[in-house]
Image: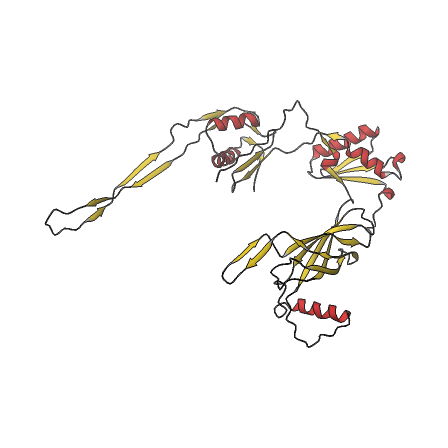
Length: 363
């Protein structure tokens, strides 16, 4: 398998890489909320839970039938057409009653597949224990499973599926942006310089010192009087502002796949690099030894081993000058014929020598 070596070469410092505030930060409080529920999928073609092995599925079936007026206490049930499942969903921000959202259904017992099943009405609870949505619908799965007497094939995960628009929202989250007196921007990549630049861009746009970076991950904005009661207009104008983000010089290494990602601010002090490979080749050419005619000897195999050693003398010591850019470093190492695996070792050795002005993150 070929190894990949990936370098992200940023634009030169003269050309600014501007990004929108919308892409670098999120509004604190505007987020999704996780919902979870326990339900039953019915209508499976003999691929459901085994009631004798999964007691909670049997208890759920009995409780459901009793609520519908059917008494099954003490009866022997052997059906395998239903399965106990966990239902999960993300409640979108500002979702209103009557809206629908997608849900994910995952088997909880020993069901083999949820194909063809229908999820019965399932309340979805939030972290506060309140019901925020009701889920029901036909389960769609991406995988399948088929088996015979001596063979079995499974593709994907047939015990996990989705119900598009399968939940109806019954309760709204109590969050009103227009009542806020201050706005907090949460940076997705915390950085002191970036937070200061965002605050400066907002202040320049507003014409007053209304924004202040409180920490590397947060910029606090006091709502100007003209935007009171109209937070949507304020957020829309702020998130379109463009700022040049800053980042720490970093080298990310994935030793398993041989992938290397470098930022543009990586710098190297003066250092000499030599890279050579020691290759030992062993060949076996056994020979057959025959005895003399009319003798009592035996035919034997005589081993013949050849050993060849290649030290890679063609690779010489290379000098990397101080303050070289990422592009110059990559070009120099490629000129040595360095592969991804060797490049990882070289970068780690340069860092150990104190000549690499960047952090190395090993995945």
